[in-house]
Image 1 (cartoon, rainbow, N blue to C red):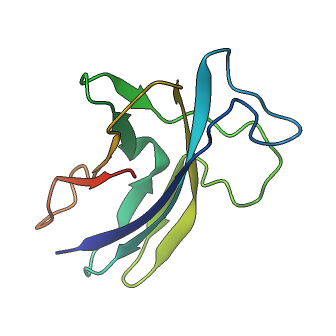
Image 2 (spheres, rainbow, N blue to C red):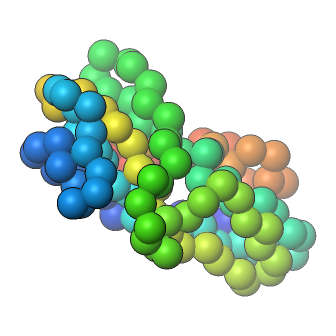
Length: 122
C-alpha cells in the first residue's frame, strides 16, 4: 500500500462551531481531523476534496472550504514525497438529523493502493 489515512471525527449537536462560523438552519458542521501519509516511493497528491460523507439514506456531502482563520485547516491539495504526510481538518455541513454517517477517502490514481477507504462516524 502506498498511502495510509487516519481519521478522527467530531459532530456537534448544534449549528454553532466557533464564534465566527455558523451552519445553515437545521444543519451542523462535522469536523474531520485526518492524516494522509505517502508510504510509497513515488510522489502522490493528497486532496482534502478526496473526502466525502454519506448518510444512511445514501446522500453524499462534499467537504466545504473552511471559512475560519485556523491554520489547522487542510486546504485543497498537497504533494507528498516518500514518508511525507499532511495532517489537518476537513469540514462538512450536514443536516442535524443525519444518521449513520460514513466518511470516504478516494485515493484517486495512487498506484498499488486501495482506491476508496471508509470509516463509520460515531
